[in-house]
Length: 115
Length: 111
Image (tube, rainbow over all chains, first blue to last red; front, side):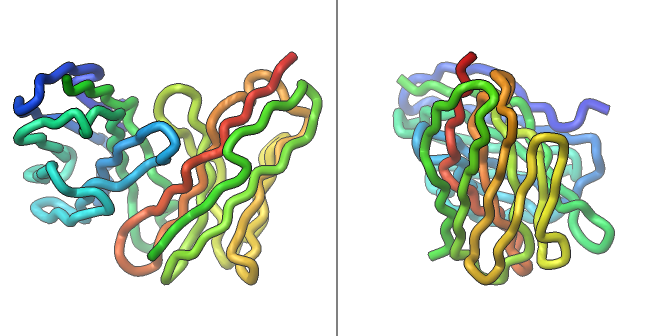
């Protein structure tokens, strides 16, 4: 049981390049989230998904797109990276509904630098 | 605007001290408040507090939810160097599916 995994762990991009971050969970959770964490800003929600095939915008969605084609995977895309997207990105998943603990399980993070 | 505010932003204490971390929130349709510990990587879950479970304790850590004051405290007694971390507070909504995080309190415990 690996929990929540993220790939890659580190990445350096040039301005304007694109990339996709992959999040996978093996806990059969319905809900998945992408956050970014910047110094002094805490965790800010980018996008989230309440189930396969559904996504929704969070607090800071601009410049990012997401897809949830399979229940266990949640992809975060940057179409044209900007230096302002330099951050540490965390994926999380949680169960929901009666009997759930509602806590979020986090992946190890991806450190992205855009030059 | 929904928000979660933590204080203090940072704290330095000596081993053996007791610390109290604060979290206040203004979040519509409150469902639960969660505390996480973050040590240079992913946050790890500590406690979840709800209307039906306003006090939790685990070893030296304890937390209380005050729904009237819209706040929570996290107490750590007899602190150890291993308690050094960022402590995050998050609030989940009953409707909608978002979690709102505070900026965290950075705790440093020196020997």
